[in-house]
Image (cartoon, rainbow, N blue to C red; front, top):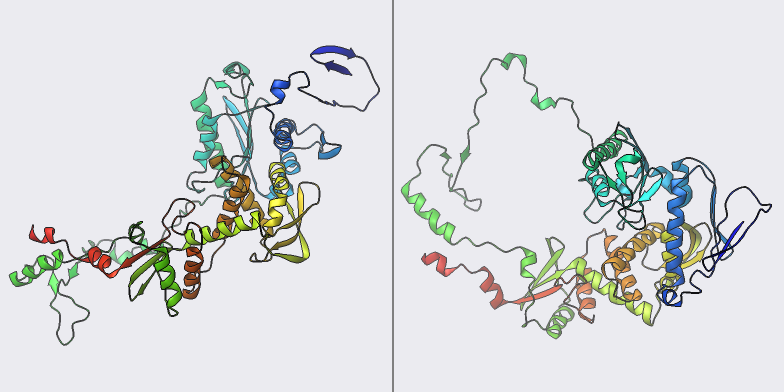
Length: 499
């Protein structure tokens, strides 16, 4: 037993205890009050301690680790291999998400696991590099793993990996960072190429990535009787005078190489000049000072037979006696849900649908701490959650608009988006970040297309919001055009005709 207090060595003696090492730290900054004032909240500091514990536990899966906090056991990790240790730390569900990686060369030996692409996260939480048994952070090696997942992940997703590298200690420099979490490799480019190839081959070997089909396409097969024949060049035949609305007259055929009549060519130029191109629907959604919130609300509420038509890219349009209206469907629904969630969090909690059979949802250690911090706010959004132990929560009730069976996936997506919001908009209050995250999670799960009456109701709900014309990402949500504006948009350009 070794006892150190205030930087002074107080005692060192032999005692009877179980085999192993037990480390206990108390009142770490009792004599440094200035540093203690810069500590964050207890849950945040606990996450930092837990993350350091996880790094050490993953580095030595052959050692039995226990982690206690406030007299509660957080981890009890039995000795085993790396796969068992990952499942013990992050949950049993990770056992089926892992793809083994193994490569050995004269420069480096690579072993470990990467996560399957469909389980990629929107935050960098499950990325661990170990070099000779020590945890490191290396953006260059991280780029190598990302390159191996190229075209398999969306732009806002990050792969999970637990990779151990064994190199010659003489070929690395560990003294370039005070915490020893960054090192310098003598053969960094070679290690980059080996690591990228090892991960890419592991993904392809276990049929995670699409593979090439080297079987001959049947349409490419040529009959034996035609092997000696010269292929005939296909002929192109077009008819510039074809009009599907013309009846009673046989259209003339025009072949490549022939010269059309001069009278026909004279008709082409006016047709080309008078041709008008309707701009993309998104370019029509431009903020205008002439648009009035009261006018739009009157239009939607007065016209009972108001019919919307999808024009693509999540935009719906509808004509009415005064002009045309465009609405950004996903952005509008996101705005309405965001303001609803803010009301639930501030004043009026949402209705919770109680579960006949409660559902258990398991999280990784860091996500579990995030959910526990957000429990009061999640209760207001309609989630009835209770701690079950082992990084698991029991869902006893869900928001009324949430379908049964989606509790686990929604909560995991919500936590990922909240962590992303925390990284991108850390200055916003917690309830605003949570309201944004839940709104985007709800919109992401909206799979069925909108009916006309649903779009009309969505437009009315949007106009009752505090900011009906701006989305959460700054996009314009609603735009109205009167007949004069529409004529200006689609009339031919006079200056081009004169030119």
